[in-house]
Amino acid sequence: MAWHPFRNLGLKVVALVLGALLWFTVSGQQAERTLADVPVVYRNKPANLEITDQTTSVDVHVRGLDSQLRTIQARDFEARVDLTGARAGAQSFSVRTDQVSAPLGIEVTTVAPGSVLVVLEQSGAISMPVKPFIDGTPAQGFVVSEVTVDPLTVNVVGPATRLGSMTAATTDRVAIEGASTTLTQNVSIGVSDASLRLREARTARVTVRIEKAGERTFAAAHVVLQNLEPGLRGTSEPSVVSVLLRGADSLLTRLAPGAVQPYVDVTGLGRGTHSVAVLVDPKGTLTVASIRPAEVTVTIR
Image 1 (cartoon, one colour):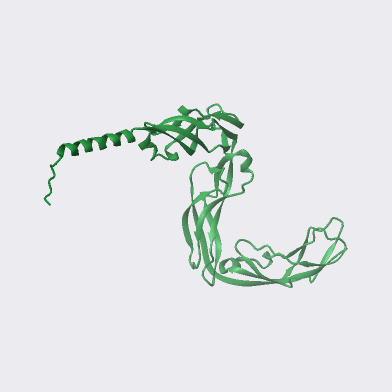
Image 2: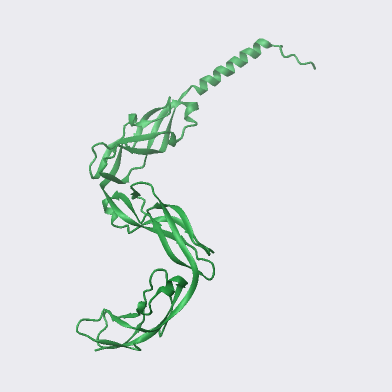
């Protein structure tokens, strides 16, 4: 059968027009929709205050073209709260429909809840040491002899009550696994408490000196009694021990014979005889490989 594209042309044109009108009618219909978890943004925070807790999102009810409402998402909106004049403590701020930014053509009709809660604290600042994060172990036969970092300290700001819980800022990971030579890396500095921050973004230059490993024995090291109660006297048997230190050859060779000081902690011990472990606090990156004997008999009179 032959195809006649122009047969019933008038009916085809009418059908096309009606279809277009139907599409425009449907797509142009007004509709409503509720969006959950629209983000709340706080502006104009007083410089001397820090936000420690806050309402993070609200729900909004909107009206607009059905075709447009089908594609919008919560992230297309933003509830803006002005903190001008805020004071320290917990405060409630209203959120009106005109404080919610919305895509063109969308009307915000309600906001729930109609107010948000913000907790503010006095801001503080403190200088903290920078502690490098060294991860891994050097190649066999090598050890870390020294770790240096520049800068040594950074300024950390945030809620004054949180600053006291931090002892140091840290760097990003510096990997030394399998290394046999000195490594230097530039890494970012940060703090583990999310409520704190650096006054200004900083990077640290971390140098990890890696050298050949060695051992050195310090024989006949005299044992010292620490934290003996007033009015008491004590002795140890034996009075000397042998200490084996492990570390970089360059560090071990520089140690004077009397630089290693073994001790026993007799805190809380009274008169009598006690078996006490011998301790040594090695310097820098040196480690204690062994102490012989590991315990001594302490007599307190």
